[in-house]
Every structure is written in structure tokens, then in C-alpha cells.
Image 1: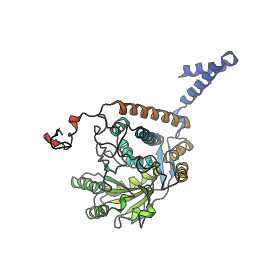
Image 2: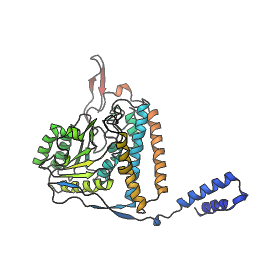
Image 3: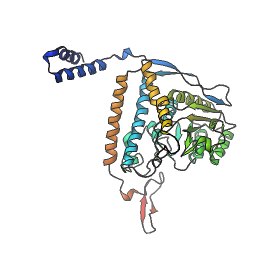
Image 4: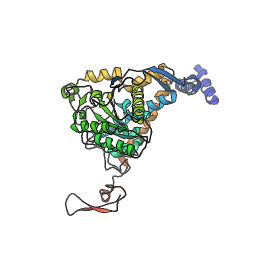
Amino acid sequence: MRKMLLAALSRVLQGPAAAAAGRTGAVSEASRVMVASRNYADFANEATFEIKKCDLHRLEEGPSTTAVMTREEGLHYYKTMQTIRRMELKSDQLYKQKIIRGFCHLYDGQEACCVGLEVAIKPTDHVITAYRAHGFTYARGVPVREILAELTGRKGGCVKGKGGSMHMYTKNFYGGNGIVGAQVPLGAGIALACKYFGKNEVCLTLYGDGAANQGQIFETYNMAALWKLPCIFICENNRYGMGTSVERAAASTDYYKRGDFIPGLRVDGMDVLCVREAAKFAAEYCRAGKGPILMELQTYRYHGHSMSDPGISYRTREEIQEVRSKSDPITLLKDRMVNNNLASIEELKEIDVAVRKEIEEAAQFATTDPEPPLEELGNHIYFNEPPFEVRGPNQWIRYKSVS
């Protein structure tokens, strides 16, 4: 490193003796080396931040209004959110190129929700969500290349190209569910299993503001409260159910109070630290055997509901731009880290470059990997069952199904 630094500075100091191009290159290299040589000791190890107080329902006290974030944590949160953002923008591009087909719901704008939730729980805890699932799939540990390959229907996808956008799964992550609100009773069932087997685990059960009016959700609240299930019900309120604003769809938009007899929190879903602290509080509440708790994350999606929705017929471009400029979760985290000496602008830019490179390589894989062969169409219907035949598009076609 010292040799590189000395050589670069030497070329800079040559001044008029060097050619113009040589001088430009030397200055650029010297700057790069100077930035790279900055000692990690120059940065703070951690910082404490004031976060927005949560609104409470049936709770005497809520999560802390201060949050400590280490430099390591901040860099991890930033890289994860930036990866999800870039992955979704690449998905948008691939969809418009007609490489991704079918239903596709993008998560950009809501990154603080899935990242804040994931870092607050354990890998052994459980997560189930609706069809806007790409961010949670990545946060739960699935590589970008497997997510994009699943979106393009390739064999290397996380469910071998047969699930697509709405049906992605991995260890302790149960999708990705296409039927509005139907994942909520399933989440309570997972929480019941946690309690039945005596595991100190919780299940995060997510749904949107549009699904919040579903009758099956209220039935699930009732059972979860009766049986004191370790279930955290989480409403991601992005203000629009498809193209309908929450004010036009719900007589009460206090979604965190909808559980009535279940305690609730309303959380700033654009702040990863606020989500993290609230989720930690909720998880501790459930692990203490107190039963379910409800969280409402106030967030915002930048894209339309799905790829068929331009997203500007029921809201203005100015509204979207205002949220981007004032409440973007990645910008908020970035400003906090830089202003509190947890990272430098240059370091975060390097992360941005690395993320873009990873996304491009993943997209290359997702567009060149082969599609699954037709004979595998019927596979993986059941787990650990003997092979059987599945009827195809008509009664004369049969596929063999292997677990």
C-alpha cells in the first residue's frame, strides 16, 4: 500500500514534466489510494440515534425511542437495502424486455421493512408474507441470482423456476402467497407449531393494507389470542391497496388497533432502525408467552401495485417524488452513517458499485440459465412421498412426480 501511495504521489508531483493525460490519471489514482488508505480507526464504532416514538394500543410502554447502531450493522443494512433496490429495478427492466412474464410485484421503497424485521429476529424464527416477496426472500438468505433466475423461470431459481415472483421459499420462509390475505391463517398455523413443539420461536405474518379488511384475518386474530400463539401480525401499510387509497377502503385506517384485544404498534416503516427496535420489542413480547402482537409499518412503494399498474393514475408523480426526497429509507440510513462518522461517502459508493456488479452478473445468469425440462413439471408437489403420476393439460398427458 505504501509503495502504491508513494508512486502515485510521485507521478502527481512531476507536474509539467508529465503529459496532460498522465497527470489526470495520476491525480485520479492518488485520490483513490488516499481514500483507500483511510484507517478504519478513523470511523466511530457505533452511534446512538433518536427514532420516532411508536403509537401504542393496549400497551403501557413500547419500544425504545433511541437506537444504537454499530458501524458493521450500518454497512450490512445499507448493502442489503441497496441490493434489494437494485434487484427490483433490474426486475422492472427484465419485465419490460418481456424476459420476466406473469405477475410481478416490486418492493422498492419498502426495503426498511424487510431488513429491519430480519435483523431483529433469529434465523430459526419464521416468516410468511404475501406476493410482494422478493425483498423478504433476499433478506432470508436467498442469493440474488437465484431470485432473478426464479423470476425468469430458470432451473437455477430458488424453486427451480416453477414458482415465479409470488412463490419463493427457503428455510423458515414460507413465501410468497398469491391469494390476498390467505397467508395470515397459515402464519398462525406456523406459530401454533412453534408453541406445540415447545420451541422458543416466533412467526412473522405479513399482509398489506388491502388485505387488512379480509374476514379470515379477524378469524385468525381470534384464534391466535385464544391460544396465545407467538405470532407477530404485521400490516405493511403502503397507503394503497392496488389503486385504492386506504382512506377510500377502510372506515378505520388505524391498522395497529384492528386486533382489538391484541396489543398493537404503529411504526415508521421507512426507518430501518425504528422497524428493528419495534420488531425486537414484539419478538420479546411473544417469546415471553404473552400471545400475539400486531405491528403496522407505515411505508410506501415507488412502483405501481404490479407491473400492469403505472402507479400514477391514482396518485401524482409529485407525491412519489416527495416521499423519495424526504423519506427514502436508503438515503435516511446513508445520511445517518455519514453524519455520525460511521462511514464515508466514498466507502458507500464502493458498496454501490459492488452491488451493481453483483446484480448485472445475476441478471446474466438469470437470462442464460436453461429452463427446467418438461419432464420435471410435476416434481416437488409433496415432500418425502413415493413417486406418483400427475395429469397434464389434458387427460392423456401424464407427468411423474418425484419428491
